Image 1 (cartoon, rainbow, N blue to C red):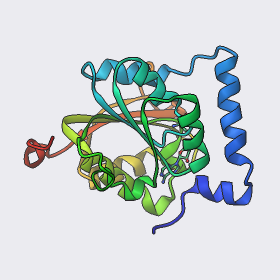
Image 2 (image 1 turned 30 degrees about the vertical axis):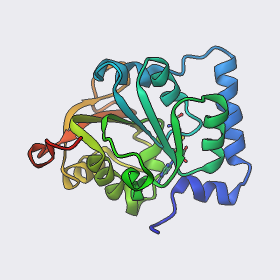
Image 3 (image 1 turned 90 degrees about the vertical axis):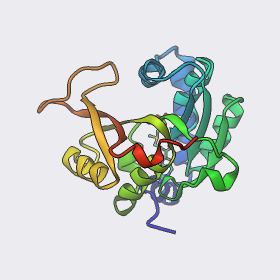
Image 4 (image 1 turned 135 degrees about the horizontal axis):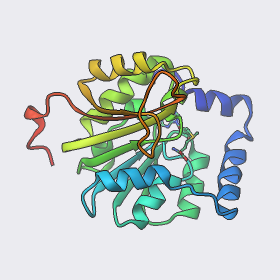
Length: 210
Ligand SMILES: C[S@@+](CC[C@H](N)C(=O)[O-])C[C@H]1O[C@@H](n2cnc3c(N)ncnc32)[C@H](O)[C@@H]1O
């Protein structure tokens, strides 16, 4: 087991943190907030009925919107309380507890790889720093041929974009697009957010993976 995620360190320090987060998301939904911005971009990237992995899914906000759009969704999160809320609030997708740095879905009976992996809502900065490279490597291993990864996080969250780009390259991923928002604003010196679309830098050897 590698370094514990920063999220679970927070939960250990404050056991009410997960429930607080679930209720916060439920409140935002009840109040009619738009919680599907990331899902709309991913839907535009994906073939119809795509296989989508919601990586660090939390209580299921993004994966649920993608399932409603007709995609086959698997969500993985390290926090069992959040996965419990996803199962309760959004039945349909497969919601699994797991650490992304150790992701091995084939070992859990999920053998088909993913057309899109979406990692939204500051998941990467919440992964422990020593595990972020492993998370990106695991993402690559779970991609279908020509699959893509969409990752978004605030750049004041302790994971500098240059470090992220360097970790992505080391994991065998290349940056297709660097955006500043999920609605396609460009990434620039004044951006406070990064949305990166990544693909396998050397897809050849994996082209027959299903
Ligand atoms: C701010 S929440 C975002 C949840 C969801 N993606 C969303 O946007 O609604 C960050 C999530 O990252 C998850 N997370 C952090 N590190 C993780 C890891 N190593 N493996 C799996 N999930 C992780 C946390 O459990 C938490 O659910």
